[in-house]
Length: 88
Picture 1 (spheres, rainbow, N blue to C red):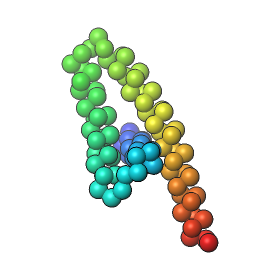
Picture 2 (picture 1 turned 30 degrees about the horizontal axis):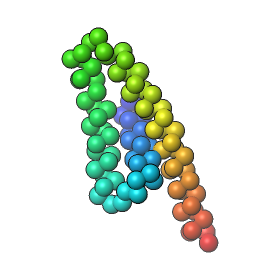
Picture 3 (picture 1 turned 45 degrees about the vertical axis):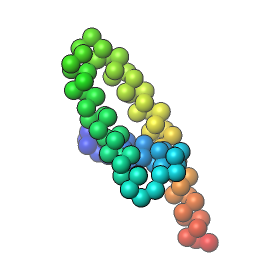
Picture 4 (picture 1 turned 90 degrees about the vertical axis):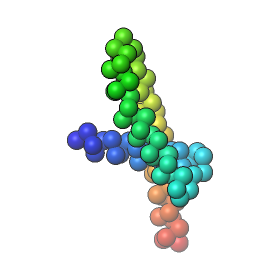
């Protein structure tokens, strides 16, 4: 289940970054890779700094919620726009 949520999160954050910064083609892939790397290495960094781990977890969860919400909106509006273009 974690993998499904991770993929959904990266998809939503990428939709947000694409919309906000006008990313296209390969830049979208680089953004998705960067987001995945940051969140993949965060637990490793937290394990090196155990005193900061709870704070890092709270900050990362906050970013996840904010970026996922904004990405959900950007993804939904983008899909609605494409649907309108297709249906004429």
